[in-house]
Image (cartoon, rainbow, N blue to C red; front, side, top):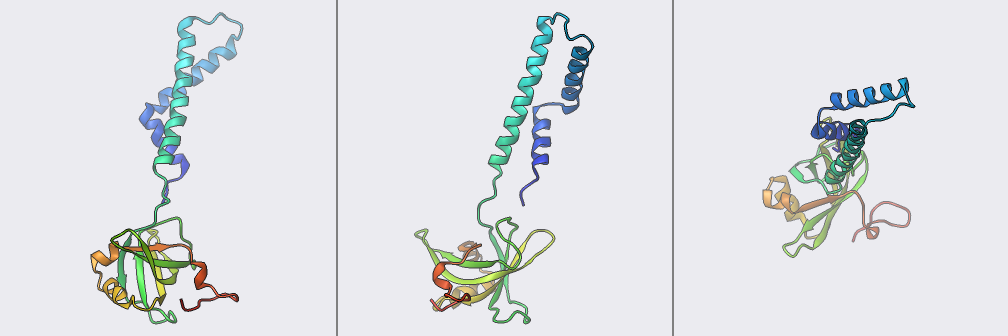
Length: 186
């Protein structure tokens, strides 16, 4: 899960230096200016204020860079597979994914197999059944394209090679949808 922006700003402040000293210096500068705004400003004070402004600029840049670097737009890794609970109608398997903010509870998903040529082949579809407290996703596979049942069996047996080559996306291809909604055979 991505961190809130306030944590990025706090971490960036810690990386820039001591946040308390920065706030204290800024506060003292403002107090001195409020007491005597028409007083001549010595060069050292100008440099101090300039340094504080540069620190704030660097802090903002560091925060933006941390947010940019930690973007979580990648698809979550498949952690394991297991048989689905019997109360899910038409359930074929349950796939456990690492946490991701791309998915929502009840959302439809499509499952792809990544070939050795880096092509993605649609193998099935399903929905997000549960997002647990740690953020891990439980996806129920409800449909499998003909010819891919062996891959599903490998996933159910937690074959690491098969798990590493699965991609779960938070969308469905248009060819799976009928005019009235629902799924059709591909």
